[in-house]
Length: 165
Image (tube, rainbow, N blue to C red; front, side, top):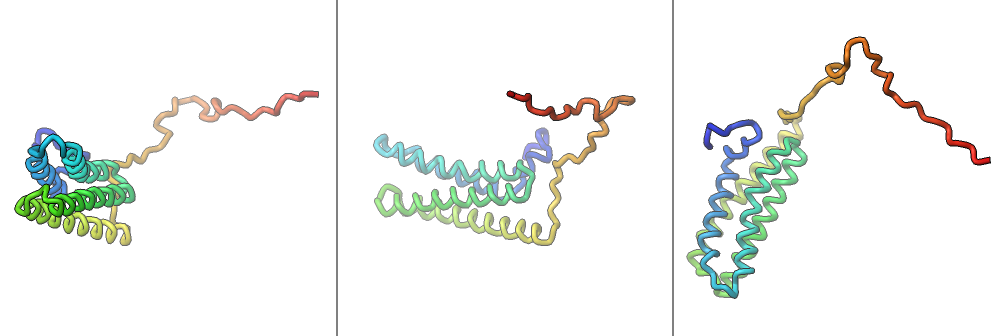
């Protein structure tokens, strides 16, 4: 990770699964961008599903809520499942070489297991109450009060509806 652009929100860049997902995306791009024109739509879908994996890992991490993080990690697993399903279909249709299938499937399997372990670890933290939402700002509205101002002065009282008789 480039330390020049490092902050808490970019911490996902240190995750092994995010780096593995980036690597999977680059491998998928190398294989599928060479496909003939008539298969470009299928190739594009495979590239998009692989691209979605690292994006969901990052988005979930940046949400900073454990529930949302877990949801996005599960979306990443879903996108990875879509990618792997495509690989099986393309090798069965003889559109993908066995060597390319083996390389991509092996990398996908490693990433899938890493994601599953990360989800299990976070679920254990959730169960124990060990998760802290570091970017959640806890503050009091008292900071925004003007000295000497009545904080209730701006409250608008409800009015009775006008009589129509």
